[in-house]
Length: 319
Image (cartoon, rainbow, N blue to C red; front, side, top):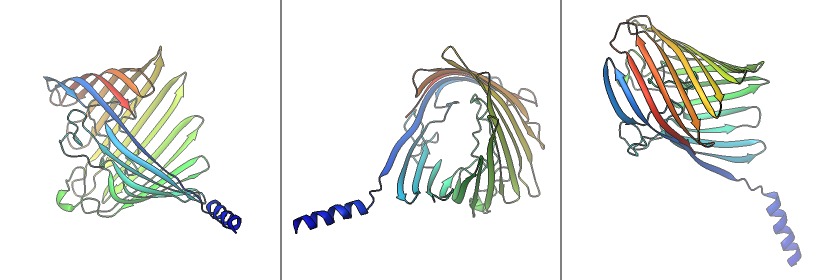
């Protein structure tokens, strides 16, 4: 009798799959010493500015549901390493960068729900070699999209994604230049690798406003070349058109990463158009820690007003 009970218990244990959940805490923390000159006025300060990767703290996990299905989640928020607050405003930690769940159906596509980067914000604004020290805005719809649903899939060598969100921003907090409140938002994108060149394009529409972003990256003779082009239009009666173009290169030599980028921002209704450039030397101390020195220059077309230079020396660590 005991043998039969033991056999049944073992059989039951084998029949019931043990699905493990893997949870990871990750993040980036960086500090820099900056010399910033704006419109001829210089200021020196410590900063959490990190041109390689902004400081953040996140938690992510995955559970195997069986049958090829997986459920995962991501919670990610900005941190200010100078005082331990959640962001530069001194507030507590909030998962404002990402807070979503994703179901991989095991049938070639996945579904997301929550707060995640919209279709065009999937492209990093520092894509051009990561030497953007000037906090230059690339995206019209720069906020992460809350209350969204999205889907991703891959058809051969082509990756596809899309998202949609209703009433993403209360109308009372809307501005005429970069956020249209109380409106729905939707977008889509596609990516493909052709002959070693990674190409991506995406569009996001919010109310009457649209934004289109395209990137290309590839390697030649050991150097990584990147390009980003974005075009935006706010729509409505006071429609504003803007554009941003970035070109960059990263070249490893003698244990260093040499980075450089150039770009131009255009605006059709005022004289605050500008061009910018940046150079940087990065020294990896380990797989996760690097020190760097960089310099960027922003030249506004209207003269001296708004011109800015940044010289920085910093350290960054990922975990």
